[in-house]
Picture (cartoon, helix red, strand yellow):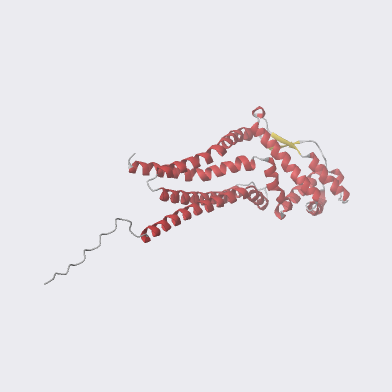
Length: 303
C-alpha cells in the first residue's frame, strides 16, 4: 500500500476512534449508569439531605396539604406550619428511607416499561401511597393540625405518559446496543489506525491528544446540557432542586469525561517523551561503522 494512502487511512481511523470515544462513554453511562436501579438509587440518595431538594419537597407538600384540607382564611398560616413540619421531617431517617423507596419504585417502573415491549401504549404509573402514609403518620405523631385529614389513597401516579414511553423505548434500545459497540469500535479503530501509520509513535500521540479533546468536549456537553435543562423547566419546577438532581445523575459522566482527558494526555505525553528520549540516545551513540585503517607510518630513508 502506498505511503500516502496508509497515512490518510490511518488519520481517518484515528479521527473516528477519537470521535467514538466520548460517544461510547455517553452511551455506556446512560445504559449502565442510569439503567441500573441500584446505581440510580445510590446516586439519588445524597439528595435526601440537599437543602434545595428539602425546600422543594416542603413547598410541594405544603401546597398539596392546603389544597386537600381547604384551609380557607387560614391558608397561609397552615401552609407555613406544614412546610416547617415537613422540613423537620426531611431531616429524619424515615424520610431518607421513604426517599430511597420512592426513587426505587419510580426507576423500577420506568425501566420495566422501557424493556418490556408488552407495555407499549401504556403510561408508566407508580403507587406512592406507602410513602404518603409514612409522612402522614409522622405528622400525626408530631401533633400537626389536620394531619389526619391527609388522604392516603392507592392512586396511580403517572410518571411518564404513553407516547413518551414509546418514544423513549426506541432510544433506550439504541443506547443499549451502542453502549457495547461504540467503545469496542473506538478501540478497534485506534489500534488499526496506529498499526497502519507510517510513524506509529506520532499516530499514538495523535490518538492520545484526540481522546483528550473528546473528553473535554464531553465535559462541555454535560455543562451545556445542564444549562439547557434548567432553562426549559416549567415554572412549577424548582430550579435549584432540579439542578441538584442533574448534578447527581451526571456525576459519573463528568468523572468519565475527565478520565478520558487524563488518559489521552498520559498516552500522548508518554509517546512524545519516549520518542524524544530515543532521539537523544541515537544522537549520543558513537558510530558503529568499520574501524578506520591506521595511517601508514612514514618511512625514514637512509642516506
